[in-house]
Length: 91
Image 1 (cartoon, rainbow, N blue to C red):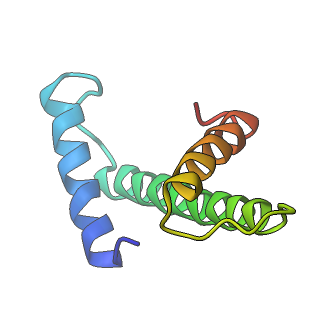
Image 2 (spheres, rainbow, N blue to C red):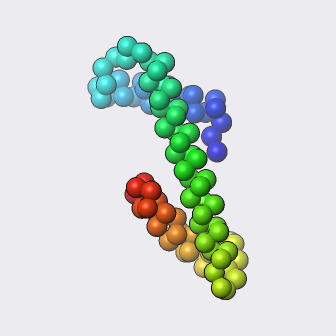
């Protein structure tokens, strides 16, 4: 999880890069753009935590006991995470 300070720092870097790459014109309201960038990052983090929770529940609900940290867990975790990301349109 990224702290508010790290998210703020990233928003400055992203905005500066967007301007340098001429993907946006010099921002008239840079504060508003940084605020939107922060919101996107926060929303993405929340979505990741929701997916992680769903995936863990799915693995724990299996009839067999899959131990976290094993190769089987890792394979199932990756598979189910990709499925959930596809459902949410993140892939």
